[in-house]
Length: 183
Image (cartoon, rainbow, N blue to C red; front, side):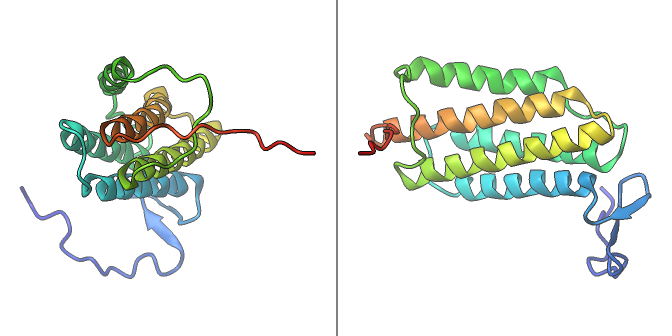
């Protein structure tokens, strides 16, 4: 494989613009760059979660998800390019169904927390929702591949389920939200 990054310091972004994969330049605060940044931030937090001790199979699923997010980034970086497919969404749906089979049904909302690993999964979930909102914003301006939004929607569900699985395997109960009683 040829070197992709021959120079890290290019100074081409000093004026507040950046290059897309098709060679065009746009402002660093453009909705497209915001979406790319949100997906990148999510991927970075997944990397942090993957450093933790996790249930069997989770590290490989997280690595696969990180690759999927790079695919999503390539779609965002090259307008009109498609890298994600229905199989990416199906992978997450299968992971979620597997987790659901291991958990008791929820009757109440739960609070983020429990173990450190579960809390990090909840952080990934909330960042994922923010990335999803960024894609919706961009899609309203420039139509995107629907699969990207679907993928992020399922991915936030995956992280919610993962947090519950992590807590269950650690012997921690879900922390149920209780509405504060006012007098």
